[in-house]
Image (cartoon, rainbow over all chains, first blue to last red):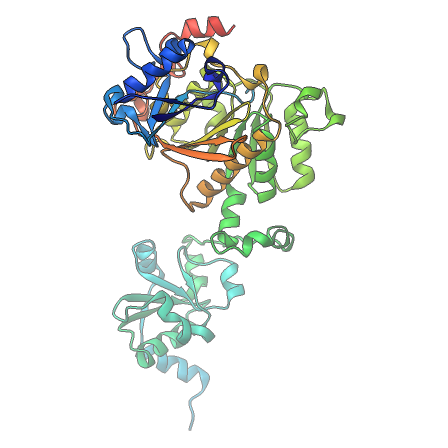
Length: 93
Length: 393
């Protein structure tokens, strides 16, 4: 089972967890399992066409899956997926 | 009978080759080694651009350091052309330099002809004391400190991230700090915005920040912009700065800043914070990815909270702001490996730092193009911009 790191804006959707486990052969399957277990994450991760939303990056370990095989990128048991939506906390300027 | 000094000089000059300043002027910047053999105090009053200083008394010991190849062209000069003549003969006769020449008339004739003179800047006694811990670091030293003093850094916001960044950059001796902020100091800021103080509640943040900066280091020139950055003023404000420090809390401004800095090729040290989490990266246009390469478009407004509305651990902007200040100093000094093409994710609760790679997007709507092609009306715009701004209120 791969580990998924959950960003702050999605933690409320997974019961406050920072990390959750999910199974699957590839990135798409792992994220689909996450969305099935925590339905509130689905619309935040996936666009209506089933692809990742453009404002969400997903990394397999430290590499952006878009430069790998996207949602088809193979995932191993020991891998970590990092979900990273854009974040803008800071100062008014 | 021993020769007089004047006779010796005539004889020495007849044994060496001399060169007129007009020819030397043609050779400046062309890779020819030019050595000033005057004393270091004379050198400090002004020298030929690019000349190396080796006082004549140290010539034999130090010349190999600047001219290891004895067959390479070498020009020596002094104040009037006499000391350099003796020095040329020494290098020619005793050390075997094959192509050494002494400049006729020295720097005096050079100046009379109106050729360029470089005056090395030196740190004052007070600056040597103030920055002594920098001067002791080999990677910084006097040259690096001078770079810091010459640097112009723009801070977007004198808030949570801008507070520690501004204070430490001021302490480090960054010569010019521009600060953009239209807000006044509020009691709720003081849990994290350490550049302000309880006494200064209600006054403009730019004024409060300036007061703290000058109390710490009066050398720093503070340029205040009591405004919000937008499409109408961004180019005017950021032009001329060496580095921009971005800690803005909203996506339209972040995209606008990205596009403007790509256009002007100004590196941006960017951080964001939320709750117990921080992100940091350095966007150096055309050397690494830009913000649009990282996130082609912003999330919908309901998924884009700012810490103003959501809360943040007070020390977190301190941590992230100082990581930003560190990256700024590295960029100015051109040392180390700035976080270009890398995004650092700091989890304060877990005390972990995760790093992911950020690639340049060959189809990036902004940085895949020539900076001159980026038009005013497309800066800061992204798909569904109108809807985003309407939803964000």
